[in-house]
Image 1 (cartoon, one colour):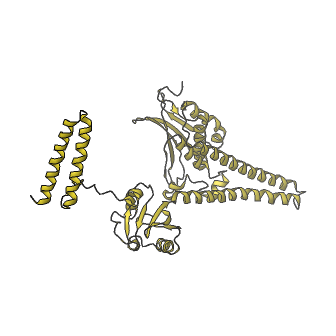
Image 2 (cartoon, rainbow, N blue to C red; image 1 turned 180 degrees about the vertical axis):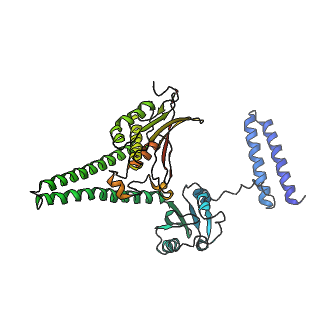
Image 3 (cartoon, rainbow, N blue to C red; image 1 turned 135 degrees about the horizontal axis):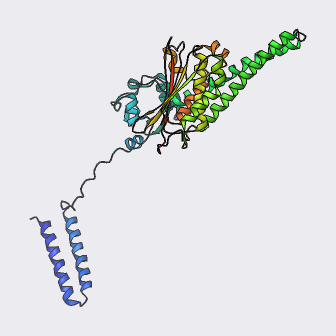
Length: 409
C-alpha cells in the first residue's frame, strides 16, 4: 500500500475513533453520529485529493438512444425521407420504403428517385431556405400523383414529405366531367326546343300540321330534360345518404309485383312478358323500400329498351347462404347483348354504348349509375354479365334481415 493509501486509512480510523469518543462524551447519540459522519467524509475527501488515482465508482453507461429523426418520421402516415447536405437519404419511414424500396437509406436521392421535378424542388429549397412544393407523377413503382413538400429541418438536412393526391385529382376530374356532360345533355334538347319555337314564330306560324308535329317534338324534348333533371336530383339525394346504411326490414315479394304492375302497359306495347321467379319463402331484406323499387324499375326498364320485342324478361330473386346470408335479385333479358369492352364502364355517369339509340329510347345515361350508388349504400354487390346475340343479366345483392321473417308477410 502506498503512502496516500496509508493516509486515507489512518484518517478513516481517526474519524471512527472520534465518533466513539463523541458518544462517550455527549449523552446525545444523534450529535455523535452526525460528527462522525462529517469527520469521515472529510477524511475521504482529503485522501482522494491527495491521490488523484483514487476515483469514485462510475455509473453504468446509458443505453444508446434511438435516433430522434427516425422516430419522428416513422410516426408519419405519408411517405417521408430525410436527406443530408450531400442529398444522401439518412432516414425513411415505412411508407417511403414501400414507395421507393426497402434499401432507401444510404442511397443518393438522385439515384433513388430519378425524378427531375423532385430534384429541382430539393435544389430550390436549399438555395432559398424556404419550403418548396411540387406535384409529381409516376413516383417509385406506382402510377399515383403526389404532392411533394421539401422543407429544411436544420443542420443542412431536408425533409421530403409525399402526400398522395391521386384520389382527390380523380374526384375533381370526375366532377368536371360530370358538369360538362350534364350541361351537354341539357343543352341539346333545349337547343331543339328553341329552334322549333323560332320556326313556329316565323314561317310555320300558319302551318297547322307543321305546328302540331313541332309541338310533339318539343314536348318529347321537354320530357327528356325533365327525366334528366329528375335523375340528377335522385342521384344527388342518393349520394347524400351514401354512408347511412338502411336498417328497415323490407319484403321483396310485394316490390317484385309492383314493378310488373307499373310497367304493364309498356310490356304489353312491346309484346313482352315479365316472369317473376322467386322462392316461395323468400326472407326479408334490410333496405330502403323506395330505393330498392327504383333499382328494380331501372333494370326492368333497361331490359325493355334493349331486349328484343316479343321476348320475355325474367325477374329472379333467390337466397344465397353465406356466413352473412344475402338475397340476390337478377333481371334477365334476351337481346343483342353488350360487347365485353363496354361492361366495366356501364355504371359511369352518362356512359352509353350507343348514344343515338339510347337517346331515341329516352335514356339519360344515369340509370345504371343510380343503381350502382343505391346498391353500394345497401352494402350489396352489383354484377353485369352479357353475351352478344344472347342477352344481358344484371344482378344485385341485398343483406337478409336477421329475424328471418318471410317477405310476403
